[in-house]
Length: 512
Image (tube, rainbow, N blue to C red; front, top):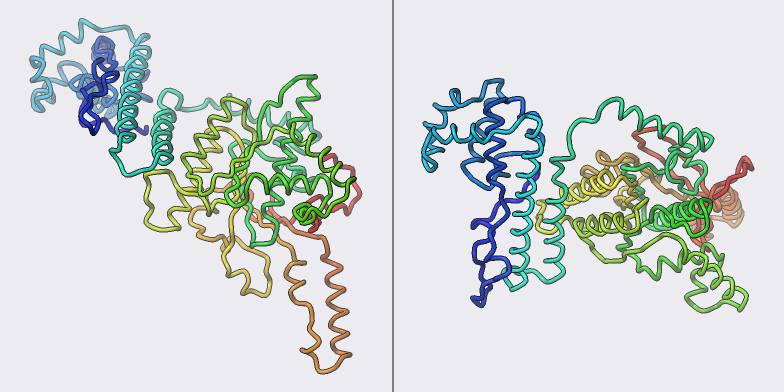
């Protein structure tokens, strides 16, 4: 259980700002505590050690407002977990030797606890009341810290103080004490059956959220909750374009599902894109270019006719309805991203998170990794934690190291992941986007490199023949998949609109 350290002075102690003024709203009220519940629970534990099973998964001595009651609880817990009996007789020697009870009159205090006992059935309720009071005290502590920092107690700007406060609140909110524990195998089987039924109703193709790519969905079953997918590639391979394609297709699928359920029904989730490299306007222009089939370069130059502009406006109105949001905060911290995702999930629902790209992120505020590799590891672990906690798929784009360029075969491998650390380990799937056309284009024969024009002509014809084979083609190399097969997926790539689509080699009908 993650706990926030208790303050040096108890919450509720008069607190002063740098100018000497007391924060009256906090300081003049006693901190939340339920000492009666603490004594009643301890009495129940001393009477019947089985009561410990009802509180042991979320309660520790640090949660008690009364320090002595907390020490007694820890002593009881230590004996019970060691397979020993914990009652006033067996605890007497330990408590007397430690001097824990000196402040409350010694061993007779245990007799007082026995008179406060409650039944084993009520032990869990009393334990939760104690834990709730602890949570409230921690909130007071966080609030006091934020107020003092805002007065100038630390050398952080306002935005960093917000992030630090959000991180503390997140740590407190994700203290899973009361929610953790085992899941019955029958429940796990029921969840697995639900997934299988969903895939069956979708004719076995997609049990998760669709990516809009037929062959990818067939290989993976779609995008699944709690999965972290790494999409990597060298610059100019089209990572952002492919991720945008997947995000757009998922948003459109959510909208289509809502429309099928009836007029006025809102989508039950949102697609969130964190664009750390491109602005929201640039990303929106790219999506518009793809859907309106108007070159992004021509859009920027204004080199479009009236019909193209009208189509551009019409498509933009259609896209505006999609449940998709963009956050283009540069160098966003992991804690800020996590807080915004949690807020979005609570207010509008969340179905997919796309991060472009993870090397531009910062770890949680307040952490100082010793190396870049450790920093990236913390970020990938945090992204996986977001996927699990919010039960959504997270797609994180990643750069590849330059060692790819030094090889004859430019197809990337897992070892090419830059500052890999735990990227490969934490990810449920690792995939690379690769376009042979990009590298082949750079190897166009130069006439000056040949002894005769005939040799140059033969080399040029051979180059053209190879270019035709790879023109408008790309590969999505699924190098790792925790829940399914790996292999290369052939895609269509249209450079003018930076658009990926299915490569139709079998002429199957597929609705994007």
